[in-house]
Image (cartoon, rainbow, N blue to C red; front, top):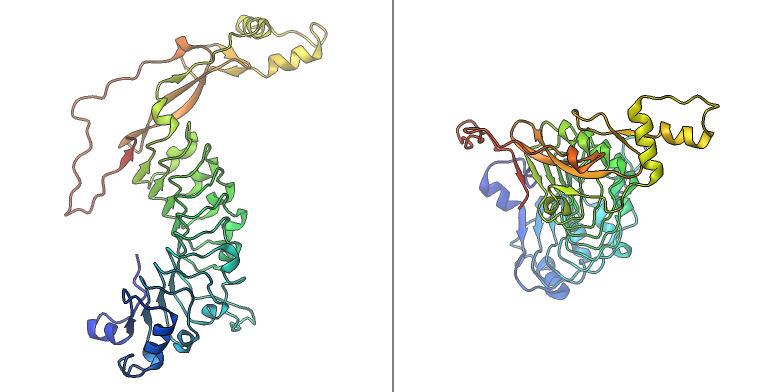
Length: 371
């Protein structure tokens, strides 16, 4: 992850530009006292400060004196009891804003996270590249976040968010989208439009189906889906050639590796339709009623290449492992006309294990976490 605290690599220079009030059990009154007192602020000019650490205190809000630090780039407010994020924060030239583990709700966020200062085009802008609102009390995806077109890292995990904004496609600079530990049940197709995305964290939610647009995330390296309700993955996921980590543990698809048999026997209509299709007969428009002709045309072919059968409504759902990137195998859903069409899994050949990662070459072992 990029370091935004200072352009200088000199440690002393970085310390000169940092105010560290973290883990001091400060409340608003004592913090204002520190900021107002030149002696306690170590005689640093507010214009020189680029990083302010206020983490792990007892703050319920943000003192106005913070706004005097006109060149502040990094603000860490994590692990306090903050209930409101003031609009004035957006006037600071922040690159990193960390407000995780507080008491923020959707109503307590600024209505717009853009700076009110006009940019060169006469509109509003934002310098934010990293925003962390994890561990708060958000109940829905904050729509104002989608205005941040230059944001690279967005962390919204451990909230109570039930859905992802369909306007998320606007965030074309996103590298990391972290939404684990929420109440999300559906992933919108728009997520597949995040062309720069490298890590997508959706673990510990209520997701049952992934959109096929996931396969368009060509730069995706990490996809964390553990602790959901997934029963299968979209077959197009094998197109993610850059994926180095896929976590699937604690999903129904991991438990239901082999098959999910249909309990209902086929209807007489289904059996008759299969026989007609298997015989190769093609009834003309005046041979059978139009509804039966449409039914016959709705037949689906069994995916087993050794079977020429078809099915209509009665099918067997089967999880089959498919080779992925030549490194591991992922379970994908396929439909069969009969349980007899399930092909036995071939045992792995000896000596086919993935070689150990080499530190010298920087090779990262590709892995899928199932258990």
